[in-house]
Image 1: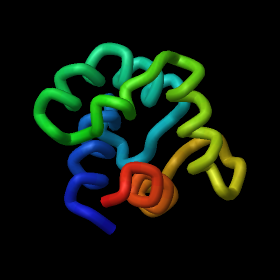
Image 2: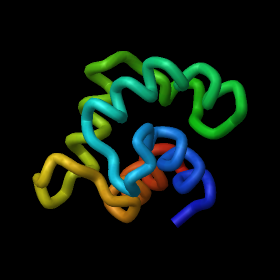
Image 3: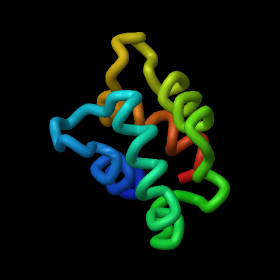
Amino acid sequence: MSDKARILFDALDLDHDGTLTLAEVVSALRSKGPTLAAQGVIPVWGVGGDDDSAALFDAADQNGDKVLSFEEFAAVVDRRFGW
């Protein structure tokens, strides 16, 4: 798992509980996405709208429990963003 995945996960984990919900991912990417892209944490093309954020979440939620562990999240973003 990449360090960038950890940084991004922590930035999106708004309640700092160690998991991500769909609402957290959408809200955090909406509010923090451009800043994270400017900092090089996420590729500029990786900052999309709410539908893109939801699609990322759905792709990562391998067990369908509606929360993402770091491992689920990292497996998808590492592959998608080429880290």
